[in-house]
Length: 409
Image (cartoon, rainbow, N blue to C red; front, side, top):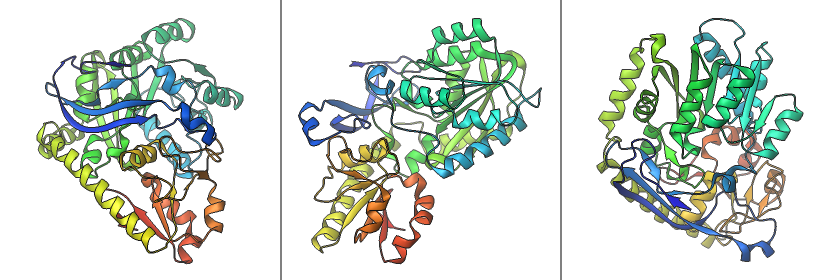
């Protein structure tokens, strides 16, 4: 484990935002109770750069430890599959040139997004470091290189395939410590008149809605439009447009081009940058307050769960996501407060949550039990979960949303 200076500006100066203590990796699910003795814990500290105000974790672990085997699959949530269709419509509408441009995706996971573009006649290829997930994508007919994307991999791909009309980097900047290596590689692969599309959970939503559970070791940094503009500018790239989207609790989609292409920024770029400045997220005070709010939420959530359990009611969780594990460990939840966590993923069912050792079961088990309260850890899919579990709600089960303060849906 190493601790680095700011991933964007290299400044060594930072302020503490929130100390999560020593925690188990959010995706280190245990196959059985026998594995508990071998669990490894690592410090997790959220800090903010005093120079460029980039929010990031102080610690950086070996990415092979984090991503070589992965348990998140893009294609599982139905809302994600619908989103892929919307994404393709938007991106093809903005891209100049061919109606069927060539598409390259960084961190393409199981190929769900690339399948959407392939169905529209586009040539596609992806790269993803998770060998198990890349294997599934290749088996499904989506060419996927199992490797960590950076300048080295980009040069190899450039030699073999040339440049690409559209380069996609969805929900990947947060996972990368070597931001400059990723953006340098993106620049190499992007055609002269091409369009890159970068999506990140928006720092503004993280701040406003107290999404502290976005913080875990797999997420090295948390991005504003300001940080994306700053990072791209260091590599002769410009953000020429931006959209705000509902997915992942609030996401921004930045459209990027080579500076030499002369794409003029849309009004939306200046508007979002001004909103970020006005909200205070490009400063220290707001994030000091963020840390205090997170500690208050922990106290309130534990109090509510303790009250419900004291009344003899059954509480379970829904969504064994990494975000959920971050919240479970930060709030020090255990099987006494949350009986088990339901999840659709067959890669997680039958295992125990990292650090807290709460059993993970299928949603069918939850539907069969006399559940009173469902704590929605996968809050970014809350509406989908409510619709999916309408029968459970009709029986009187309540759904508890944990942030920004615990409230029932």
